[in-house]
Image (tube, rainbow, N blue to C red; front, side, top):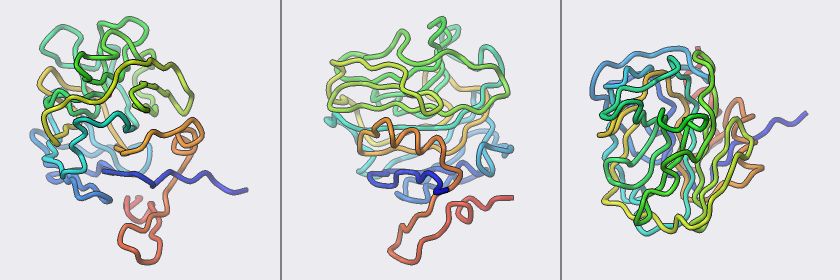
Length: 239
């Protein structure tokens, strides 16, 4: 039986989330630096990083991560919440960025406890903050790994949870942001409390089949330098 294959077309950055002090982007060269305490834990695939609501992976970003003016991209991550309120925020319950360009006023895949029943959300800044107020999925129980995907497809937002389409909303338009910097685990308005693994940002809009394949993929064969394909397991350094 053939296994699913993760989509590699359009990858801007892929962070396996091994412990710092540097968090390598093994595809796009957008390496991050840990600001705060770094703790490696067992992830969904290999190692993952545990976040305390204060620690942040700061990514300066190449030009490819500057999404200003673009109306199409995708972002995905595995996350494991620590509690029923996995955030240390500026405002009560808000906001725990899993991965974002929130500090560049771009977008965020995050926890927002103000959205009862749709706490895990995707927001995009396209003049206003589209999706803010509950565009996503319910908060899962603590201690479980789940896969989250936000897609902007020609200005239309889509959200997926564990490979399944949840909702869409037209009218977000193109991203209006201030640069290429990105952050994992924390942004200026708050931080995520829990573990994060397998963060990916794409320049394309993943479709339903690609999202499901990414969710089901236990590993990835990649050829980032035009040589023989290297198994993702070896890149991750599975234990």
